[in-house]
Figure (cartoon, rainbow, N blue to C red):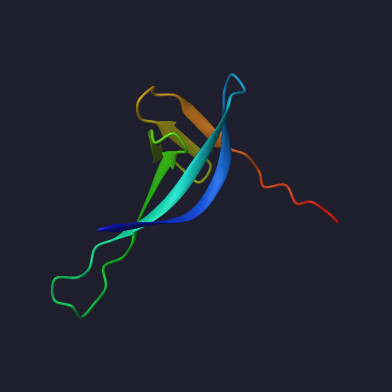
Length: 78
């Protein structure tokens, strides 16, 4: 199984702490070699702690049980 980093974002907990979250897609080569299995998306903090996705913008830090919310993406105008 190979994991590829496909995204990064910041999330904030209720106390205002900011976490850097990495999004990975993992895929397992099919046993029959014909059809590819659907990739599985997993999340981890930059420091390696596991993160579970609760809904579109809510995540749960597995080790501590803290819920974090994805920060909106800000666009910068040049």
